[in-house]
Length: 390
Image (cartoon, rainbow, N blue to C red; front, side, top):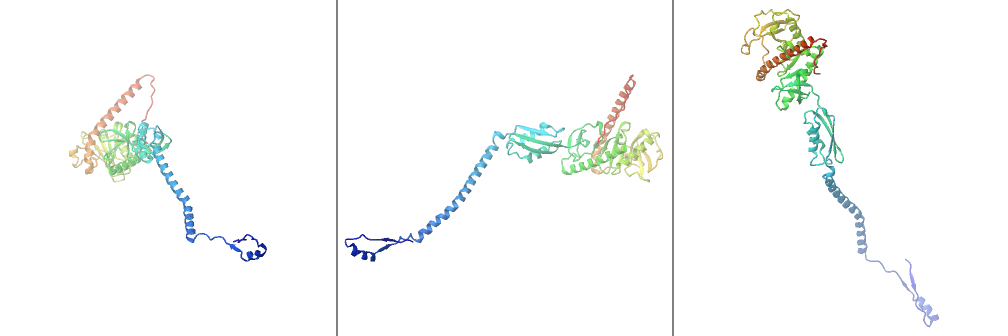
């Protein structure tokens, strides 16, 4: 701290008074600053001022968030994001119009920006032919859908007599024509998870046996398969053998059907040939097992040895009596159904007779048309073979 010396004015007696003046010099020092409390108060304000920028940033961020959220809601609900275009690909059997309708309904309230893509995809999978659906946005006003369709695997005849396609998941797809395919009976039409699981097992078994039959070259001789009772599978033949049913049991369907058809062909040249209605190989075709050949009620009386001898199990022929006499001795009827299957099989009996009659009539008409073409001069003779299910 620097000191300031103040010198008084010189009087008359400058010479004499100079020494006194110097002797009485006054030294002025700077005044001290304010008290300690003032200094502490100033320091507190400085600390507060340090936090003001941080609080301002937080407040600014909150305000910006609120504004962005409000802007988002306003933009999402604006007509700018209203769906106007739906691009669908991958649909050949599924209706594109139905797909577009589901998508537009799903974005009607939300617009493209806020569309619930998962919910729309679930709704699309409820359509008959849609297995998977991938939905995406095409901003600002479009939606894109990629469809994976279900593959028809089998033709099923329902209880009402209609033919429909089903896939391996037992999902009903749409109307079908049985002309070129082996079809299946015994479909459980209840809308329950248990019924769907059983139907799926039926489809798997049906596909396995038909593939085996095609490999062995015998599939073309079968028109339908009854899978109502998986332990008593039955195959109905086609063509001139449309009235004949083969009881296959629960396993080894390829070898059993092949054996039954070979036995049927051998018996054609015997007296019982024209009267055969069914062949039962449900017990298997191992040596010692009995194979029953059922005859129509109007067949003449044949002895038990009427069937020709063949390599393999013993073959026995017997008349097929009417249902009321099916339990009498000496009668070889169809395998007795389970209690829960009887009612459905009774309904199928009349339908089976009608089917056999219709098939036979169609075969006769085709044969007549073919004979007519063969008689025409210069007519080309070609052999056509119906397509089979794969």
